[in-house]
Image 1 (cartoon, rainbow, N blue to C red):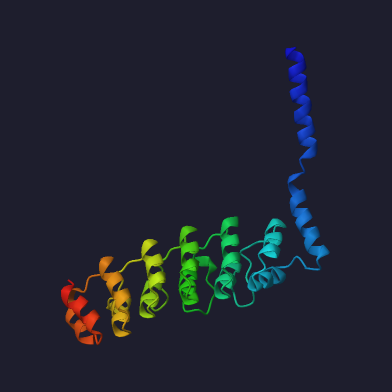
Image 2 (image 1 turned 90 degrees about the horizontal axis):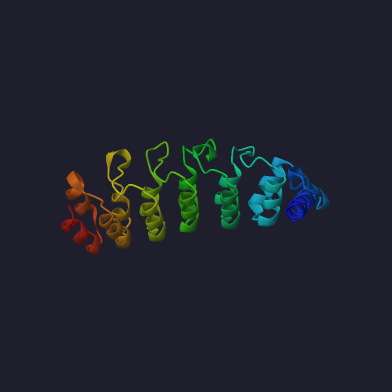
Length: 227
C-alpha cells in the first residue's frame, strides 16, 4: 500500500512538471503577443506605451523582459515618463513590478529635480504616496537646495504636504538658509502653515521676519503664537 502511494505521488509530480511551462515560455509568450499586435519589442515602443498610460501593454513589455530602467533620448526612465505624463496606474504597475524609484531615475537637465519632486509638480498626492511607499527618498532637494516639501507648501497643496510629511519630509528644511514655511506664508496658504507648525516647524530667529511678511491675518496670528 505504501509503495502504491509513493508511486502515485511521484506520478503526480511528474505530470505537474510536464504541465508546468518552462520559465522562459511566459516571456516568449509575451513577446509573441506584442509581435501579434504589431508592437516592436524596443525601449522606444515600451516608453511610448508608458506615456500613453497603456497599463496592459506596459505589463506585456515587463513580462517579455524589457529593462524598465531604459531611458529615452532626454534621459527619462519609465518611472519618470509615467509621473510626468500623469499616468498613475502605469506608475503603480511599474512599482509593483519592482522598479526602484531611486535617484538614478532622474533625467539630466532638470536642475537635479528628483522623481518625487516631479511627482509634486503633478499636483496629485497619490503619485508621492506611491513613490514613498516604494522607498523613494522624499527629502532629496534639487540643485538649488529646494526639497519637494518646499514646493508643495509654496503652491498650497495641502494633500501633497500631508503625504510628504507622512513619508518623512522635514518641516524645518531651510532652502538657501530660510525656513520653507516662508513659501506658504508669502503665498497666503493658512492651512499649509497650520500643518507645518503642527508638524514641528520652528520659526526661530526668523520669526519676526515671517510675521512681518504675513499679510493674511490668520497666518500672522499663527506665527505670532508660534515658537
